[in-house]
Each structure stands twice: as structure tokens, then as C-alpha cells.
Length: 60
Image (cartoon, rainbow, N blue to C red; front, side, top):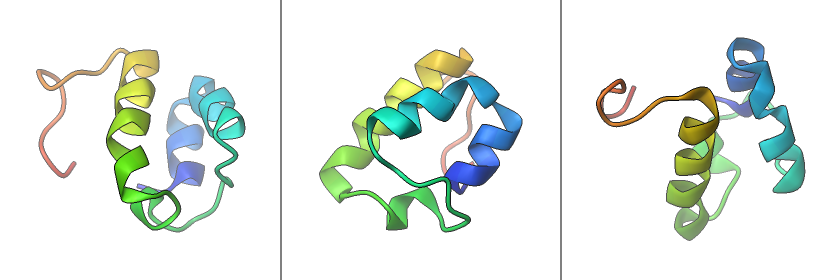
């Protein structure tokens, strides 16, 4: 998903993107951040929206 799409669905994630200086672009998030940053960023986003590996499917 793109940062823009994520914020449209989960508005409370906007601060995470601002803090990490990630633009609210329409490009896929993995194209906007370094590979070593992606996993911790996704974990932070998932924590904010109350998601986990129990509620998410891989790649989705």
C-alpha cells in the first residue's frame, strides 16, 4: 500500500509518516523507504492500528 492510502484508511498513522519524513505519496511504501527500515516501520504502523500477524495476511 502507499502511505497516502494507509492514511486514508487509518488516519491515526499520519504522525508516523511525518516523524519518519515519509511523503504521503501514491507510490508503494517499500519504494519510499530503505529495506532495513521497512520492517520496523510496518511494525510501528501495525501497532498503531491494532493489527498483528493474527489479523493480517502476508503481503496484504
